[in-house]
Image (cartoon, rainbow, N blue to C red; front, top):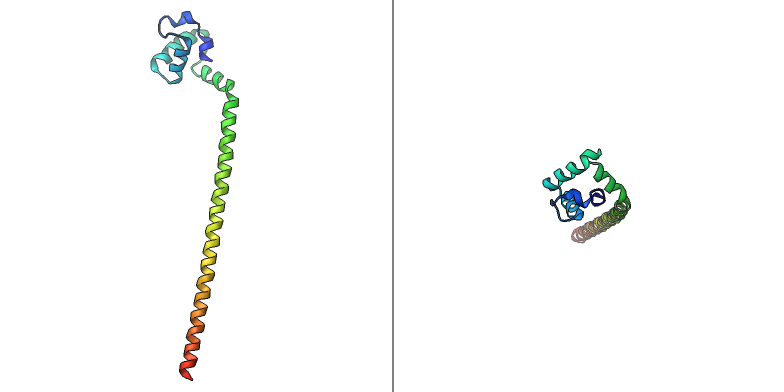
Length: 118
């Protein structure tokens, strides 16, 4: 976007091409920021106008990235739920096994007590 707004003559030896200036501006180079403001300021363009126009022109890319992030988050949340269900099931199986073991020990102790009393 910035490259189209600035003419080659306006660069005045500052940068080799408009694209160079645009890349440096995107990197937030202080020198490039000043040059862009020097060029666009008199035309009535505020500091954030170029960024806003760039965003508008690339909205499809941002929306695509947003959709991919949402899909990733859904997948991650699904995996977290599966892990939690697995842990709960394992804990339930362990509790059942512990209860069965305790019952077996109680019955064994009762049988031993009966046999010892008889």
